[in-house]
Image 1 (tube, rainbow, N blue to C red):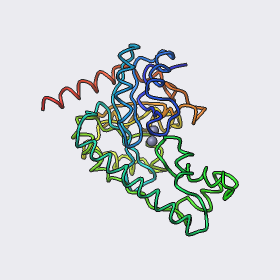
Image 2: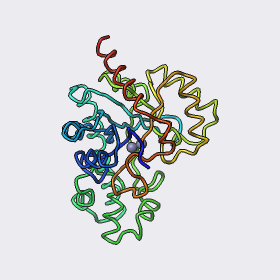
Image 3: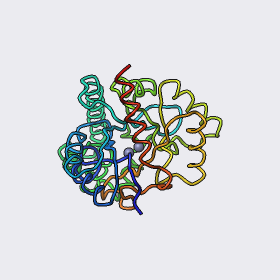
Image 4: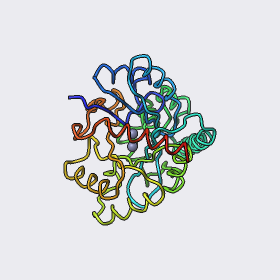
Length: 287
Ligand SMILES: [Zn+2]
Ligand SMILES: [Zn+2]
């Protein structure tokens, strides 16, 4: 069963397997009414998706997903309806790309120091045009016989604490939220379950802190959220008067169990959130 909208989708511009136009056509075929493209640290795919959306008659919102440093597990921030032509946004995202590629070279150096003879060209080949990351190092190591499985490569070399691990730069919540706001966008906390097993009070305090920085919504509906988590996140969003959003985190065929428009609780989210976001964006422009 397809949902009405899907506000969390990756394309080949980051780590998805469908191009922005293919994503739009797939969503249209599945009967969705609106989608948002939320590639990691880049808005490069938005223009193509917007144009294809116009062609096939599907509402496409601009978007991005940014990794954020926080005291808990993994924090991702979604930014909707952002101005993709903002030079400030471009500069900040290019900065992230730059630190990402510096990190990759450091990982390569460490691997070389450990006697792993792979070249960056091997890693690039594995990435096939995607943003290069640790999974591509793992694949290259596998191919050259330095690891038995991807997991083995991560366990022995690449995971946090392993000898070829390199810390990753992340914006702090204040800066990440500020960037989205400055580009006229709507910052939404992505898949809160990745923050880890927080006590309800801890989670609420954190969300309240994020709201004070400008957070405008929570991604309540997400394939990996349990009914209980959905109820908890929904309660928090309603209590503090922020948006309830949802998305599949569709990555194309990379995550075969996830299809566009499918996320836990898809009947509970409707087009109204899109209208609300558009209104917020218009109000933001006027102020
Ligand atoms: Zn994410
Ligand atoms: Zn995502």
